[in-house]
Amino acid sequence: MVTWNNMDTLASYQKLSTMKDRVNIIEAMSGEEGAERVKRYTTPMAAGMSYNYAAKEVDDAILEQLAALAEEAQLVDKFEELYNGAVINTGENRKVLHHLARRQLGKDVIDNGVNKRDFYTGVQAKAADFANKVHAGEITNAAGETFTTVVQIGIGGSDLGPRALYLALENWAKTNNTLKMEAKFISNVDPDDAAAVLNSIDVSRSLFIVVSKSGTTLETLTNEAFVKDALVKAGLNPSNHMLAVTSETSPLAQGDDYLDAFFMDDYIGGRFSSSSAVGGVVLSLAFGPEVFAEILNGAADEDKLATNRNLLQNPDMLDALIGIYERNVQGYPATAVLPYSQALSRFPAHLQQMDMESNGKSVNRFGEYVSYPTGPIIFGEPGTNGQHSFYQLLHQGTDITPLQFVGFKQSQIGTDVVIEGTTSQQKLCANVAAQIVAFACGKDDENSNKAFKGGRPSSIIIGEQLTPASLGALLAHFENKIMFQGFVWNLNSFDQEGVQLGKVLAKRVLAHDTDGALKVYSDLLDI
Image (cartoon, rainbow, N blue to C red; front, side, top):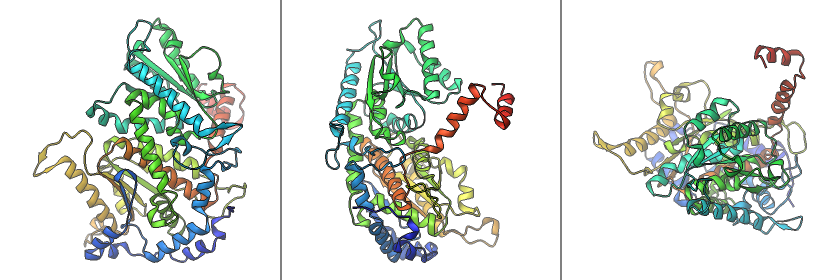
């Protein structure tokens, strides 16, 4: 039986809190000691990747204390309860089952007589069958032409995760001849977003996926109407071009407005829904069901590692607890996610939502205010672009920001050129290696403007190549990291009440039911 306690009541955390500034990483990462540390402080991940934390401000004593915290906080036990169907989302009285959508963890979860594992597997099978029929030309437009483009209409978790995964594999799929359909995404209620996408495609040969669990999301319904209007103006029947991904009880599931509907349930939150029909339909259409299955398999293999009680063999929990040390003991307010892969250009944005929506809380699972910092600010950009943008602050700013690098030894496309004796990929890898050491060790200079203090902690996830399996493992790693941190902080990481207030006030503005400052802003915007 697990118990839920605030972090600051745990004896292991109280001892950890006395270990501030214990490690000087300038010294630890220098010379032969640094070389040995890089070899030793690494943990295998799924899909042939590894998590290296040599440049973090930890040593064996801190790691031992983090292991004690993991045990006292019952992190693995809580994870087991989650994937076996306990009501972990206490705010909404719901189970949390996105791991089950990957099929390979835990017991069967029976809910109202329904085996949820079978439910998720059935939805994926239906999406696969539909995609195969589209690719084979068995499902066409009214003129008998094949569909060439799929457009996802959704916002938040219905957009960020699937978009990030699609962009991550688009060039890989082209190189491996597995790109079946081009995918586009409409999310912003700004009409320029939808108009720009519609102007870039042949709507007569496009499928549109409307994604909303509740079927009531204002931005998504507005964009759906925008697209339907464009289809009608083109002389097309919208019901021949539109799909719905929604819950069985939502308004979108009723009637004959859609070519087909694929169901999700309340047990998979939006930001964790890429493993469900939210990601499965669009990615199966874009790449083929086999590629989506590889993503799920990579995620499932990483999930298995997250069940290991040995902290040093559990990369997701280890990353999470080092983050706890940085946030709560060292006092760092933010974390930068820095993928040295252009294909991961939107991955930081997905992690931004996943982390900040999950653990951006100031009350615990019981509605009581906590007395310690919780989720950090997450931001990021691909390297080397970020080096020419915000790395100035990371290197010499007054605040220290922990860094999470992601790098791959090989490019996806394989096209490269040798310039000044090295390839572009070698230059990319050299940059990330140099940055890790530069952030850790710094550089002395008599001119203080050119001096770098160092002592800036970082970790790196290293893989051979960004593939469907490694992408799935990367996705699961961060999902599990966020989950473990929420467990330590005693938060409900699976609701998002902070998102709801803006929706309510926006509806008031549109209904002209406003007063005070809200009315003044409405008048200023001429609504």
